[in-house]
Image (cartoon, rainbow, N blue to C red; front, top):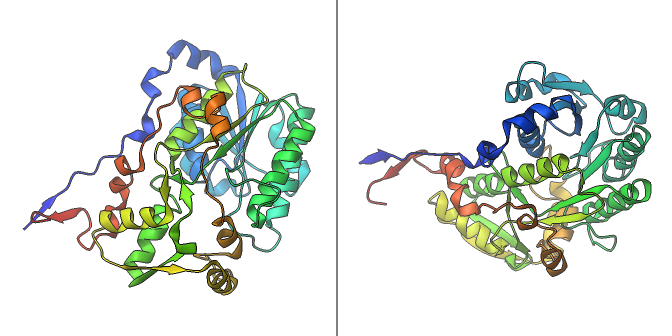
Amino acid sequence: MYTLEPIEYSRGIRYLSEIDPVNARSNADTLVTVFGGSGFVGRHVVRALARRGFRIRVAVRRPDLAFHLQPLGRVGQIHAVQANVRYPASVELAVRDASAVINLTGLLFGRGKQTFEAVHVAGTQAIADAAVEHDARIIHMSALGADPESPGEYGRTKAAGEAAVRGIAPEATIVRPSVVFGPEDQLFNRFAFLARMMPVLPLVGGGETKFQPLFVGDLAEAIARLVEDTTIDGKTYELGGPDTVTLREIFEFVLSTIERKRLLVPLPFALARLQAQVLQYLPNPPLTPSQVDMLHDDNIVSETAEKDGRTLKGLGIEPATFASIVPSYLWRFRRTGQFRSSAA
């Protein structure tokens, strides 16, 4: 016998009831340009800004694929425009008249002209140049793995992007999130998909790399608060969830949630990188050499950031645990979907 298991997803609208309607109305005269606003993180940031009353210009390469954002706000509040960070002229047009600029652009892997260097470095520089020219505040999303000495190109170019922003606009605010989860994520969903398809799951480097999974709603809330509080400038925030877990523990949680048993096999970094050299040419690669390189280092908030209050708690946000949210969207990977055996 199977019973219907209720699935709830409410954390995406946390804090919205706390927004002052008066402040929301006062924000109606403020235009915020969001680069990368149609993506996974972007749509949550756009919603958080819309609930605060901001006018939002979403700068994306394909505005025709951003119509899903318009229902997140009032009529005319959210407008998508064409902009490609590889073309500074389009970036400058997207920034005109904006009071704040948010850069959420980023790549997990490169394709053709969309390379790490072009997007993370040159694109970031173009956005910062345009923001300074139009006297707009800058909030730049980087990553906890950003490091000029990082073994992965992703981490190195993210660090170079930060340096470019700081060189152009020292007062810019930088946000460094850990791995981000939510209904459309490429973290828990990706692992659950692999678990459904493969009898054996590889643990790169033995699965000992540590992470602090961050709920996308909390990341969006943090960015919206940084936009609203104009007194916060020039800081670098490190954002992570409340739980520090290893890659192995994430896989074990996913398997438990989707009620499947799989063999977890440690995979040495050298062998993983060899496999990634081949897998990177797939249309949507499950693993790339840069991702393997990034797994050499833990992806957690530093003690210095904790001490200085440059974290979610420093912004007054109590982060959500992944265990409280992830099951609400991983149920589709169970053999019985949203149904669960009463004997389970």
